[in-house]
Amino acid sequence: MAFDFKGTFTRSQFDRFSTFVRAQTSTIDARIAHLKAEQARIGNLAFAFDAGGVPTQMSADPPTSTYVGKLFGVYEGLGGDAEFDLQVRSTGQAIFRATGDETKTPQQMSNGDVLGTPGLSDAQTADSMGQATAWAQDILIYRREALERKIRRAIDYGDQLQVEINTLNRIKADATINGALEFILNGINALISDRQYLAASNDSSKPDPHGKLAYAPFAAYMPGPDRSEVTDFERTLDGPAVPKGTGT
Image (cartoon, rainbow, N blue to C red; front, side, top):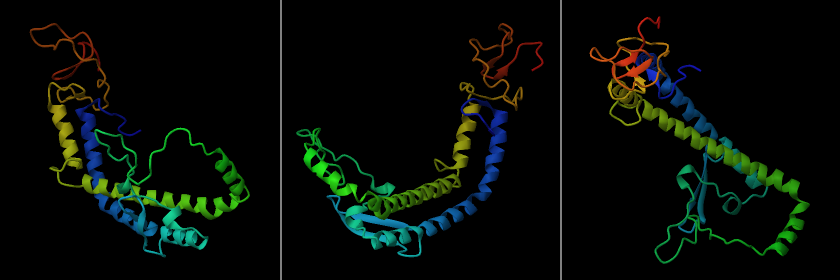
């Protein structure tokens, strides 16, 4: 794998990576344009909910020309009722446990569902419902479940497209913006320049572009003119050090 290193590397390796990844920013605008076109093709099916989690409004945008819009049209044509059967949510409408207080624990989820307790005591109705649906399993799967799965997957795909668009917009932002590529690269360069941070070696004095010395052990004592001679491969405050007489 190209640039197959994580937190341990040399400045020479990082400089090569920086050159490569900066060159890729020229493709960001084209990538965003492609992602937006894909978003337009997929479309969006959105629900609005009241405070109790009951759907109050549903819209397929655009209604017929997109993939989601066409799936929804088929779903309704086959007898589906989106208000009751297809309560999909976007990533911005996550369900969570409602907050309790000092007198009682939470009893509801944010969508209005009441939290149950173990032991449903529903054996008789469960058995009867099993018999009532057994003969129609193929119909339920074909007319409802298969379509619901496709709709949910398409909406999830649309959410992922938006996440990638947001990421790319942040990457190409100014170097002062946290999350921008230049902001990240500047932060890594600052760590490499920090003599006390030895994980990323500043190999300026002894270039190591292949990273052969990147994983050398940390030096227990820093070598110097008034200290013992280097006898092992090690990482020091001034970059990697090698024993005298080695060909590395």
